Length: 130
Image (cartoon, rainbow, N blue to C red; front, side, top):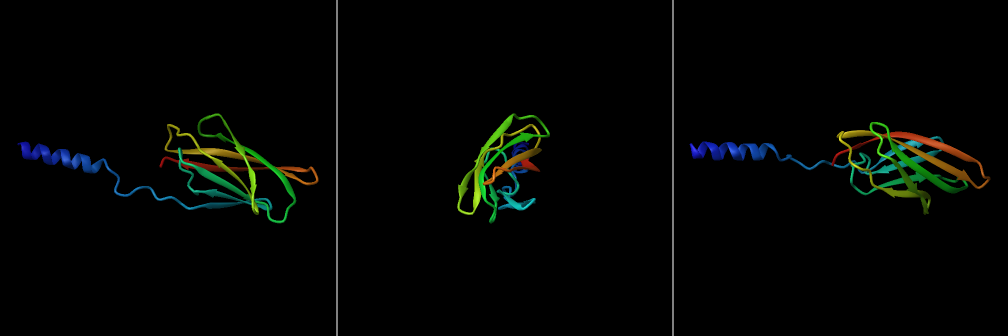
């Protein structure tokens, strides 16, 4: 009897552990008008350091600002602080965990050209639990 109980406990413990850790997609590229946006890692796991890069190419861009808001569930407004890093603008962020394993977010970016003209870019993306 004890042997059967021990075997059942081992089976339950083995069933509760994942076979493999989740694999990260290194990056995901999105074309937003004349700009290329890169999410890294591409599948945007929550509670993990993330990077957004906006490649502006040869455009004379003087500033990039942005924020993220939850679409599936309101999680507040996450401000993004972009800085120029070589040929692209970059922001680092961390998304909070929601009760949903897969959550939709809306990214809004405002690009300011040297002429003073501004353009607003938007993209929807999903995050996931790690």
